[in-house]
Length: 420
Image 1 (cartoon, rainbow, N blue to C red):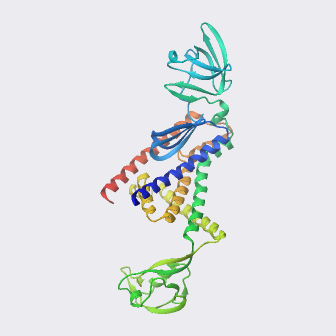
Image 2: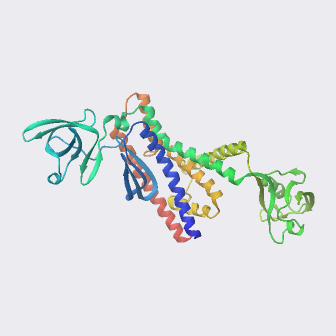
């Protein structure tokens, strides 16, 4: 049962942080009037697929991210050319369906050869029907049917490229933005669940150590060491003790509400640092609203700095392959943290969401940062960059990212097999 719960929580973590990212793209694209063709979690073959309204929602086999496919971002797959024989279905004289194959099997349709067609601006189709050219208006949400697949047409005002620089930038930035919002909310929840540290306590005593000989007890609240107040800083306590190997020190503590003190002589470890043989625990209390907010801000800031430092090392090639981790290693660590409980898992999920948001803003081809860079260049130049050139750059970037992902994943699997 524990294993099933761990697997479920691990999958849930990935699902939540990826879904909230793609939902950000989806929501602001729809708000701008862009036709969203697909909302996908994962890459590769479809596992689950269904359509609601204009958008197809898919769960794909490879759990390495997701995407929102907007009309106009890439060349449309289905094209209708003059001279092509098609069948159309009309409603109130307006074309609702355009069939490209199995024309003899279609019922209640008009069949003819395309003379001219415009599915982006004027929305019309002219058909040669038995030698007479007939003109028809095409509905803005008409569908093209080919190989049993329906594709909704995308008039120019429904395409990504037709929107303002601000609308496009917001639709792209919204993915990382939602990750930042999720991370902050989860950090706030973590502060609420973990509480605010009130003091440093003895959490455990190691056998045959000075603390045991001095009859210290689990639960003793340490207030000062050699006259220096400890407060909630366990590291400060350890540092003071470490400076006094084989030298008596006075530890002030509270036991059962009564202040007490005793003298202990730390013993040196292999590094020559003084140790008394205790492990820390922390007394906590429920945080106030202000403490919850400031605690969440502090955690957000500290984790951002750590993530940026890690990315800096990656960019400057100060890391080795074994230092990198792909989906396999991330899932492994997530499952380990899931076993520690919901409190630690909440903090880890916040960190992953923050990392995903920051990573996606890097100016690396195929990532949101690169797409924002192209939009920024367009704003400066006051004219768009060639869509073909931009698509080629993103394609190369995506291919390289997938190659790196494969290498890192292979290394993670090998490491797991070896038990490292």
